[in-house]
Image 1: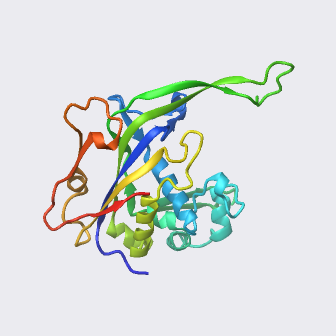
Image 2: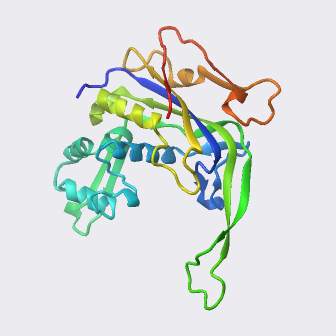
Image 3: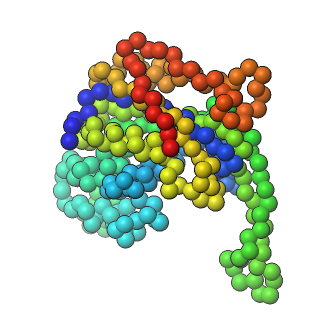
Length: 282
């Protein structure tokens, strides 16, 4: 494994067409929006998709979704206890966790598992080098809703019709930006390598493969472009904010309501000595 030596910043442009990219369970599962009407995808949602892609690529994942569990463990505590003896020191526990699971050495993890036997309790924290921002749309989005009929009732109907009414919400069109960075100092602590960075890059490029659902039909979520900046030192030639802000996305003149990526002007301001790798998504 090659140690990561240079700071990395990245940005992803995502197109959403007639899909619910990230429903809010406290708001009837409507697509998340800010008070100003911008669409929003939580960092937790993005990390879940990255984990799923890494798992598809054959990597060991600690925080597995229930329908993707490969070891039949029903909880994180059970998975941790199965792989790491809790009697080890905190530093060794964190080291073993980072070696076993790529998502731990990528995003970090809190291992806080209680036990009646205090000697067997675990309280270990790992800070990961990869940080993901909340994803925001480039302009306000329109949310459409439709009434649907569910033909199977989950409760006994006692002679009544099994049909029940429901509602689906979706974004008609939206162009979203996902920002992120990789910190070298934290990578050194978790063992996150150059090879791991390339795996994360590939996961981002292919983010929506095997992610189709009723809320996100296949093809309704698409990675347009991945911008990948590799600095020439550990701390970075520019701040992450300056790097991310160098990508300008704005509506073209006379466009009031965007319906396609072509309705946006996408410009990359040059940063002296720092050129991004521009990768087409899939």
